[in-house]
View (tube, helix red, strand yellow):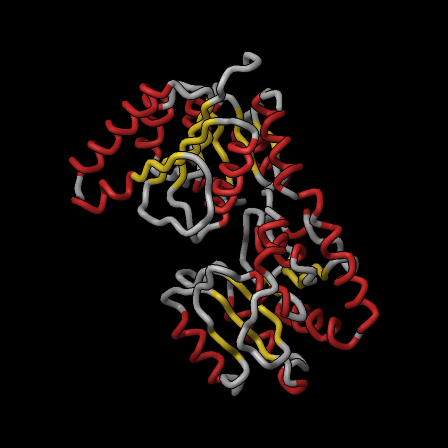
Length: 367
């Protein structure tokens, strides 16, 4: 139990403070914790900062940028070890990918001396803990808590690694921040649907989204497809749009610091991913009062989308069914209106205030 009136110190450790979903959660929690009077230290590995955050920033990425190699990595590890020891944090919350087993074994056992919470932000749990259950249990069974962002991920960890200290806390979103930004003007003078995500790998499967869109009634009804994101696959996706003869209706707008203004004006958002953790963008779409069409992939969509109430859940990886769902939202105006009207209310339980309180309760911090 935290001693009353004691200034609580928390270290939030992540790869960066920009681009990704886990990083957005880290940034949102830093703002929430500081508002509760908690001293927050944000420690990041890469020199990337684009999200709004609160508290002190410790940017290990600036040390990495000066030189690379083994000695630089050791220097950063020793710096982190000393920093954690000097500050004597009440809690450490780790948001990073942890797929280098030996490195993570050393960090978990030698660097993290405070009560530590390890987060898992994907159904692909091997990105966060070793595949070998004995090693996973050795590293994590005595930590304060493992926090997953979906119940499906929690169940998988418990089944595969037999860990008992696992709890689900959903991703929070800052509804007020979204509402303060979604009214900005955009230079698009046509109706459109939208997809958002990185294009470095094919995990978001925008090729399937383009295929489903090209087979739908939307192009003939002059409803365009807008894609936000950057990555090496963008040239492949542009070539696919050209091959499908819809290049004039598929728009690649790159990375946007404010995606909410595009979500707000979209007819609906489409998620075509192979798998997810708990995609923040679905919650952000709902906060923009925009309904969602999504594959029922593992994990996340089924824990946010109520089929035909705030969106449409589609048989996982069935592109034809994805096309049919997109058509349904255009053809059935009554259904579309119901989902649009329910979108905002369905996301209230994911507000930073509600989710933040769950984090305080987990750490037994009185606020």
